[in-house]
Length: 83
Image (cartoon, rainbow, N blue to C red; front, side):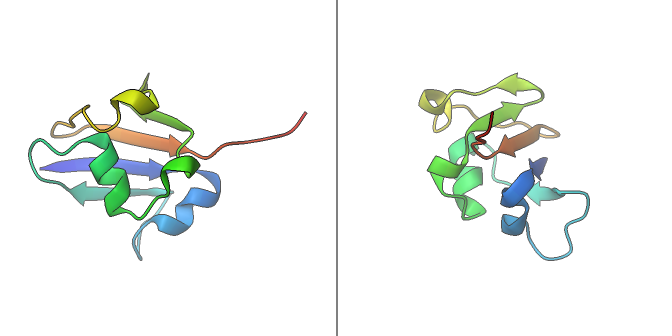
């Protein structure tokens, strides 16, 4: 099944070659979790600060158990700092 993974800011470098507009349509296995999909991209967990599925926040404690469905959009932002 396919989901769309969007990686923002410095995380874009983890997208596969040929990905455009900071996103990639990705084939995943039924029942794959958010955490499993992010690990498949090689994303370090500490760099996945804000994670949304279809615009809804997924806290770190739920990322290994929250499963994705066909057509979901998974968006990830790294930690930011500033003032």
